[in-house]
Image 1: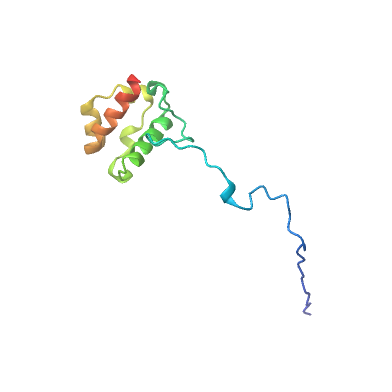
Image 2: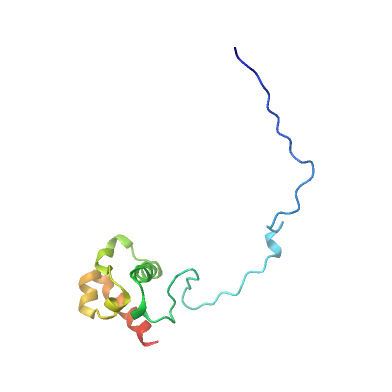
Length: 118
């Protein structure tokens, strides 16, 4: 035995007015964007924080954001060489960075040095 049924969907005849999005984006005011270095508002580390207190995950986030900032392919750096916390990262020398990250090592070392002294 086969049962046929029809399903009808009814749509409201008037549009809903509780939509939180504006009807026109032309009236939206975007916040001012600084022309300095790019900012990463969702990052768990800030340039004001002291890198020696970073967790291992904050070190990886910093590393990823340095690669993004300098447009470097993430495959060119073995992340396992940076499986450390901020205290260990800050104890690395220029030579350690060069050995761990190759040609990107000097860039990372300079940025970390700037963060430590700011």
